[in-house]
Image 1: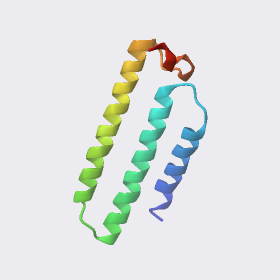
Image 2: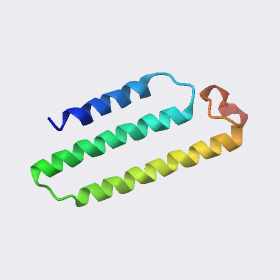
Image 3: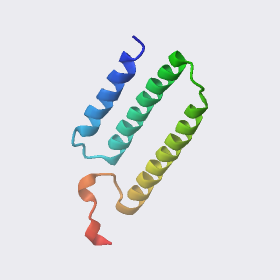
Length: 94
């Protein structure tokens, strides 16, 4: 019963990520939503299986680093291009 909501959240996040959105921010938010659902899923599994939760601290540390990297990319893209549209990025412009 407790595993249904995180699985539903995971598939909703994958659905939003699979759509072709124009903004980089929406893509980052859908990835963070997927990470949150995975956190819930692993947390419930470890609580019901009576595993040690120190593994969750390592996972949260890596996920926070991933979120920080995505936010820094977003800030750099907005400073460099003025917006976060995927269509305005030109890799040949370097």
